[in-house]
Image (cartoon, rainbow, N blue to C red):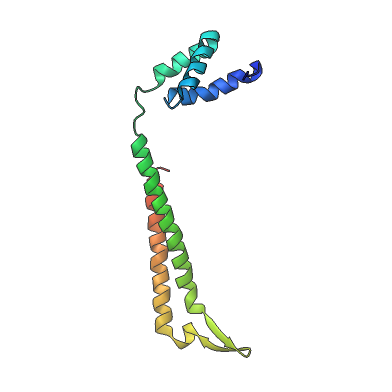
Length: 139
């Protein structure tokens, strides 16, 4: 498969990232090295990238652990958002029969309504705290 000359530079720049991360297949390594042998500008870019790149990619496991932890925080944020919304709106629930309000939780069971609303406030506070913790994670 031939790559047109006008696209070769862009394709090789894309492959350079994979090559420098040492995640390229052996065939890709051969293609990048052959292109560097033919193109002096690309060879200079490759040499400069190797000098500035660390010998070993460090922190990959740490970054993955950070991503897993952040996903966990976002999952809890979604759960707490739903709980907060449900518990804060529940005291305003009503039962209507024959176009007449038969039961209004806030009016007919004020203690239960206050407890639900307090649970909603707790859920919103937890939502805020988990959001701050996720933001401190670095993502």
